[in-house]
Length: 349
Image (cartoon, rainbow, N blue to C red):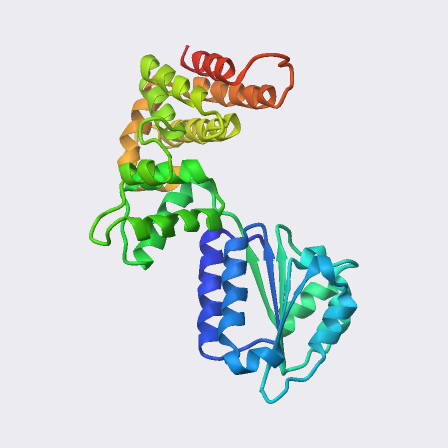
């Protein structure tokens, strides 16, 4: 089983929820992977919907891996439900079980049909070569979560708000994605706040984000990329001065990651044009390869004229160097602002 792409993760989640809503239950759910958001959604849905409120008191057990060993989990799973067709046993943070999650194999080999065992194994995955994994895949449900790539997050934000009958400006979605990273739970928390604060009739904009979350629409890593791409030295330095006043809001690793993604796209655009030489390439195809929304394409084409493929590759190498320096390598005394200024100067010159 190959590592899922993010779109596959979402479709798997929707299929599992659909089955659960139809009362199609599996005896074991192994929910694993690096992104916790969908793992929590599935386990919470099972906890909230499989049993009635009256049945939950006697037939629903929630265990935490750090507090139990595999024997405790097996004993809980082997109990029969009381005055109910099912019992639910949820093991949260199963990766922290005191001995080994694979010792649950003694139960997995002969699970009770009346028990729904949910194993939440976050931040990592179970070895797919093991008998333990293969048996769960055979008799139960395996869900593997994966973090989205950075360029997929703005579209995910737009889709999430659309599911809530809300809308967001594309530029605002990009700013929010750059600021919050790929932690979907954190993103949803901020989106839900905005959905409460911003009137339902209004589209969420960069101004709303600046006012309510604290991310400046003018001074953020995304706007720094725009300044560098357009060769606007004055604007780039103004943004750095703003960052310097509040380094916790825009730490160097976040700035470097955003710049790396930016120059990687510029390099990919050159490679795509080299591949097709003089043949026409549709904007849709370019957007698909770069993983960008349509309104960003012109900016990347302008940047590609300023930064050749050789220059873009050199900038990527430079960013790796400054990432190491920001972590203390070959850098005894250069502070936050000076390090950013030196990095941006070398990129633009």
